[in-house]
Image (cartoon, rainbow, N blue to C red; front, side, top):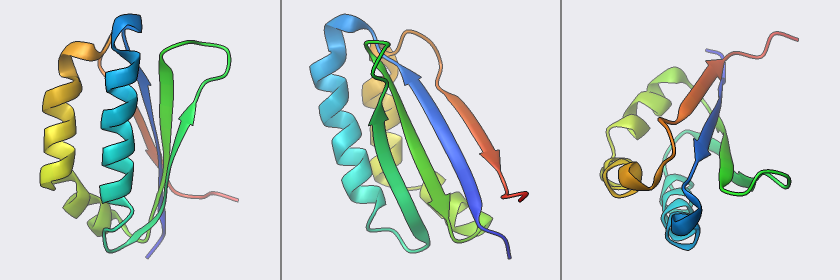
Length: 97
């Protein structure tokens, strides 16, 4: 089985940055406890205010699938929806070199 790499990009409205940051921190903390989660890091874009991305590494695709059904991810999606400038962009892949 190959490890699954993911980058999720979020663009939050400026007036929600503090609330968004707290939601993201909670999501990261809970996700890091999940089986198969090898990396789950929150990164704030240094040049674009309100832009965050999560760099993920999962042991397998199946572990990521289980993550997609967790309550903390569902809560994050519901609570952050109105704070986002646009729908999150998610890129998934396998290491090629």
